[in-house]
Amino acid sequence: MMTTMHRVCPVVELPPGGRKIVEIDGRSIGVFNVHGSYHALRNVCPHKLAPLCLGPISGLPDGDGPGGVVMERMGEIVRCPWHGWEFEIATGKSIFNPHRVRVKTYPVSVEPTCCAADEDPSIETYPVSVHEDWVVLHIK
Image (cartoon, rainbow, N blue to C red; front, side, top):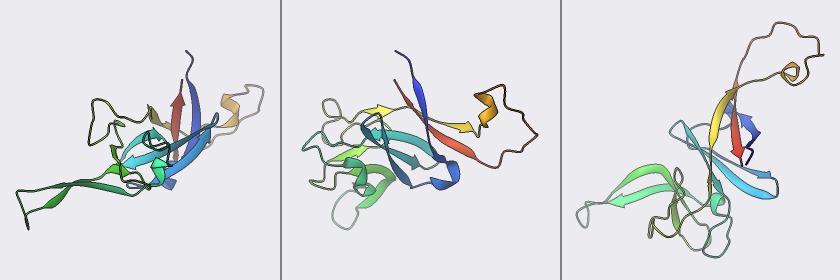
């Protein structure tokens, strides 16, 4: 199956902790920057088909008991805005049942800015400098 690449946004528009929802080939997809790594999830919660990627981004509580609870993995978990189901942004796995419930993930890369001449060799080109890179989503 052939993979197609879709420009999402310049890197500067998706800082750590940020997200962008895009529509590609009839699919709503959330693209996230988690601590400088880019990940993409289908924007559909498997529970009741809610727009998962619009939910809060958080972490997971951990601790030994009352008063000793701390939040870990901050910025790595997205919570469904309707019923609170939680998923790892990087893997799409659910927190409550990671072996059976998950959300579709897509590969994401950062690619250098391209010019139109890369697509059409008949276009006359001039020297340019690259000021920013692009976040690119790969769909099979």
